[in-house]
Length: 331
Image (cartoon, rainbow, N blue to C red):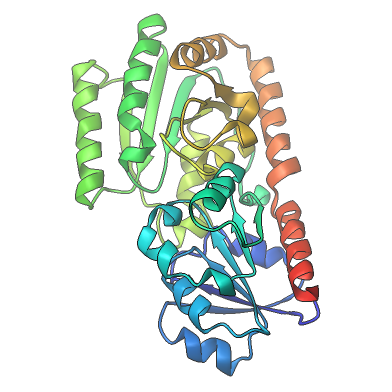
């Protein structure tokens, strides 16, 4: 970069996806958190290269005051694009590049929001060294987890599918974990899950776990690591995911993966080897995996971890950002 400084702007507490990438970049990083007084920040520091994490309030502010000599990158994760008030308020003429996590989302943006801006898809980075390879065993313990019990995670549909698995093999268990629901939307989905567990008599088969995953835990991963160590298969069953970080954490920990392929935003882009086209195929896949030997599970664990290491390590993803920043700086 001509100017070997990157100014990173993000709302407080929402930098957990970007931080591992920033740590790997071989440039000076100046960080600013919050959405107030950003105009003063970029002007007083003479910010040349600016990365705004999430296409929300800070992106709106910076895009309106950005000067011609400044270079602005906005990373759009997913949900922001469906907030029209944000998409309409951002001054896209002042944005030099939009980075997406998912290429299908990138194409949707071009069709529905703006087709004149330079865009690129760079997936999330996984902190490989944070997650150890879990000890292989012959238990059939499935896991699905996320920050919230949000309906988009489709945990109710997952429970309905799991009930069919248990009909064929009662040796399976399922844990669904997230933070204690406080938002009404999350509470309703949580209680819908509880009702389904009672309906299908799965009280001894399905656990709804509440654990701390927000705040600093998103960076430390200590609770997540403990959770992963207690299971040997990870399930991504959401109605929509742009990447699904939890699924990647499961794979890098050596868990077997089961990904719902019939959903919005193409999961095959990242998780082709673990995707199923329909519920029937996924149930068959889970049952077949339940019969695999310890030796085969050990082989699978190493293969799954290697895939994440080879494609989504912080070093590999940071190199992609380094090239992007170099291009923008030289433009």
